[in-house]
Length: 138
Image 1 (tube, rainbow, N blue to C red):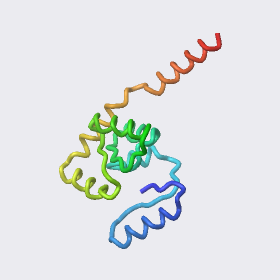
Image 2 (image 1 turned 180 degrees about the horizontal axis):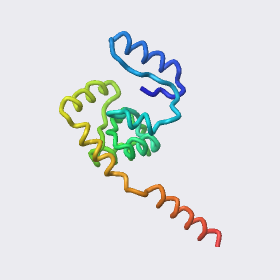
Image 3 (image 1 turned 180 degrees about the vertical axis):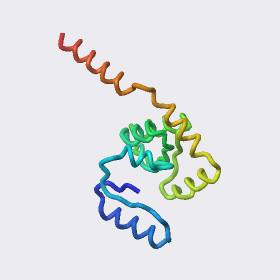
Image 4 (image 1 turned 135 degrees about the vertical axis):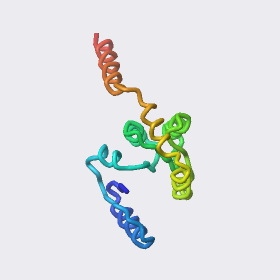
């Protein structure tokens, strides 16, 4: 579990895992998210642009809990319509992930996640931005 800079959240999740007898690695800020994503079976989080991009690029299913109206709900719809994840109420995350795991749905969702990101997308965006910038400067 990656908690970012929220130290109280990290301590709370660590305590919860310990009290439930679960074996869990709970960390704060993570500098190497690609490695963490590669180690994960599933990503649970919000539908922010970076989280969605990282999860899909890593080929990990994304379980979205509590998308904020606006860009996050647009991202949420994209992930769900691609079959690359699911949207659940925050209180239902554990039950939903366990059900998807038990039904064997996560591997296929991961494959669809990776397939939803065009190869070379970042390079294409950079080329488009540079071309637009050069046109505007001319």
